[in-house]
Length: 409
Image: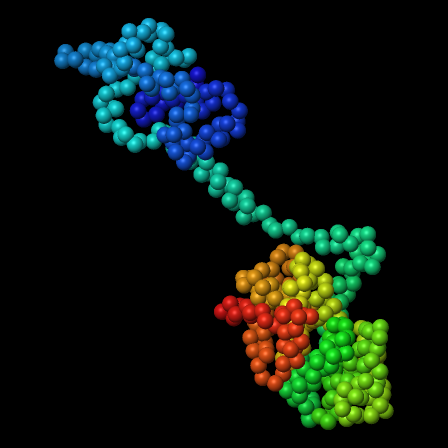
């Protein structure tokens, strides 16, 4: 029987007295950690019996000799019984307590082996905490569920978005092109885009059409100086071209003439269409924020609520001229990040989102803070086209969501 000697001179048996399993030892150690005295009673029944039986005490008489006496407080039947019958399954002769040492010891003293066990468990907990901190969040394969879908083009999807990322800057307008316009300013552009968002909603067009329309307007104004009385004509013509590129059922030229209250004729619209296509060299395949939005929402494992709120954020940015300084992929990622912060009211950007967007949380903060300010003032002033669109049941009342103001701190 193995054991260790504590500070009272007791030879304490090892934890596994009954030959139990390792799991029982661990369970007992944890029990002793929270309540050492209670745990000691569970070590072995032999020890419990030994504590209640008389033990030998060293006493010194007047002559200095040591004599062995029996505890006088033990029951009579125990005194008269045969010592051999009272002897437990292992030797208790070693359980000899010196009275002087016992008197000096504290009643509440914790045995040394309990202290060692607690220290061991604390060390195990510390190691587990360090290991948990070292484990990084895994990056999910967001295309694994679409491998059997030929329309998902899983084999090429990474190459496609890598190409989009390389060409997005060439498909954007210069962020300071308005300085070349002599008769236009940023406010006029904002009024035009806000009105086109309402036209887009009235015609029930696809989201891709709206983003391509804004892209065509900015790229055209970058290369051509336009008078303010022709700005609305540029807007409806850009939407007509975007409809031909994206839509299945395209509104007619007459529909756009009517929507402008017949401010322009059919021939003027067609002439502007020719001028715009030649100016842009028929390049309609520019990656817009919406192209990246679809991919990034998949990485964020979005639901309908997050998808609608992200679209609301990015459409608020379409009206703002100063947001042209951000590339489309950054706008899309920041819109999703801002929407998540608005929904959950705390910062959330997973490793999976960071991997597929190639943007860290720190890189998104500047753009995200701008979006929060737009969200905060949406519905006020004269430009409320986006707010009116997303305050409806069709768009999940996304405009009612509270802005993530804590991002501004």
